[in-house]
Length: 193
View 1 (tube, rainbow, N blue to C red):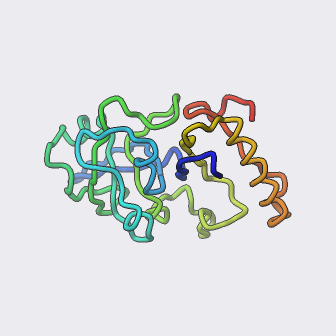
View 2 (view 1 turned 45 degrees about the vertical axis):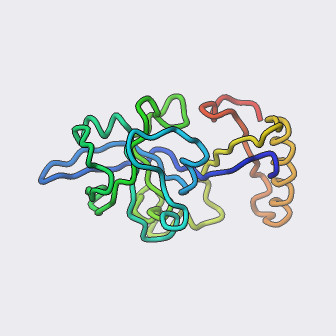
């Protein structure tokens, strides 16, 4: 869609346990495509976002922490970037800490960490009866987030998405009832188109 400068994939409400020693704490995060931070541009207190060439590939082991989680769980350790921590019983490397105040792109949901799509196999909610739900065309689990291109409006984007939806319905008739739902960031469940 030419109305967008970029599009990233997002899966909200990914549970994650951070373990140190015998102690484990549950937090909520988001699974994102590696270009998410380039698109959203939240700013970083430390480090950076993900590297698309490395972090969108299976076997990735990276994580970005929110400023709040970094402070509360990791004591604001200034050497956290590059450190290996335990997430869902897996060793992951911290690539960055988002700027204070960034809670994700949804108004009512607070994201405490982000992991790249290369780690989708490590997200229990995406596993369904032993199948990889995230690989199934018939599964509804992914949201997209996009940045409008300069000079484009939501109406321009909506018109393009209508055409894309019609093309997809022709290509995949079993999914003809599916459509795109377009809202400003943070308003995903606000109704309208």
